[in-house]
Image (cartoon, rainbow, N blue to C red):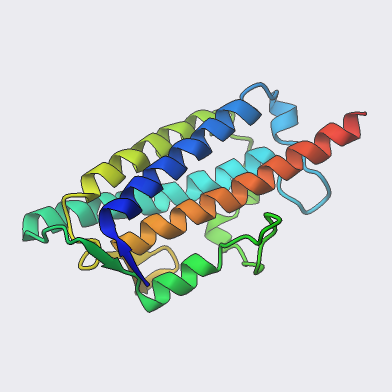
Amino acid sequence: MKINAQELLQQAKADALKDLEMVQKSFAHLSEDELYQAPAPGQWSIGECLEHLNITFRSYLPKIEKGIQQGIAKGYQATEIFKTGFIGQKFTNSFRLDENNQPIRKVKTLKSFEPRDLIQRNLKVREEFANYMTKFMAQTDQAAQVNLNRIKVTSAIGPLIRFRLGDVFLFINLHNYRHLVQAQRVSQLNEKRKM
C-alpha cells in the first residue's frame, strides 16, 4: 500500500494526540484501586493496559530514535511516498478493530510485554504514558526529515524481523488505540459494577 509520507506522519501525530487526550479525560480522575481493578479474573485492568503500552514504548522509542539519527547521518532524504512492507502491513493489520471497535484478530501478548509480570503496581503509569506519547509525537516530527522506506527498525520479537520506519508509526498507533479502547471497556464495566 502506498501512502503520502508526510500525511502518514501528520496522521500518526494527530492520532497520538487524540489518544493522549482520551487517557487524560477518561482515566486521570481514577484512584489507584480503580485504575488497577480488573473486570474479571485473567483480564487486564486499565492500569495494566497502559503499562503494556508503556512497555511497548520502552522497546520501540529508542529504536525509532536510533533509526532516525542513522537516517540523518547516512543522508536518507525524505521521499513523497511511503510503501508499506509486507511484514509491516501484516503486523499493522493484526491490530485493527472492526466497525464496533472489537479486535478483528486475537493477538497473543509476548511474555516480555505482559503487564502482569510487574512486581507491584506502577503508580506513575499515566504520567509515563503521557511522557512516552509526547516523545512519540516529537519523533513523528523528526521522521519528516528522513526516508521512511529505507530506515529499518528491529522488531521487539527479535532481530530477524525488521520493519520500515513508516510501518512502525502505523502499527504503534493502531496498537495504542486497540488497548485504549480495551481500557475504556474496562472502565465502563467497572462503572456498571458500582451501580
